[in-house]
Length: 220
Image (cartoon, one colour):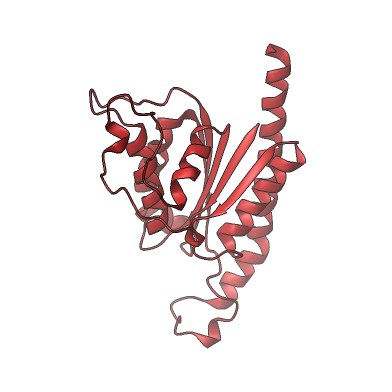
């Protein structure tokens, strides 16, 4: 069983990455195969509309553009699980997240009847980290992120959403013009809640892998 993990944050070792790496540990502890990629370390763009994936007799669910993302898309379509994480920027996922989703969707979209070429099944875990509190997220952003979650229906699997609220943007707020945030309150919340989010991501994916493996054994 294989899991592809995509970090759509420009930060490789902060909130989003830490949660993704804990999910990776959960999958590895359960005996899964894991590949982890930082999207901001790759060279790629959104869809170039080259139309090569729409040619007659072309391989479906494959992006023909030659850059670092094309092979990642192949890996996602051939995986059992996709775990993707993004911070909330201006109320939305990051630009690299959108570029990935654009390429993923277009390569599986039929222009004959707008159906989905992909017939496999990939389960998805979506992590979203944000400096917003849970109350602000529910009021301003939740409806839109439900739509982003639904976009993974093209992978025909189960999608689980993990919001992580009120995260720390920097280690020392006194060095920045960020007076709209109360550093003491954010640190107190972070010290209490982030370890719980961290442990939850490990345990959930470890449990998920064990259930999948048990099902394979039963129906083998």
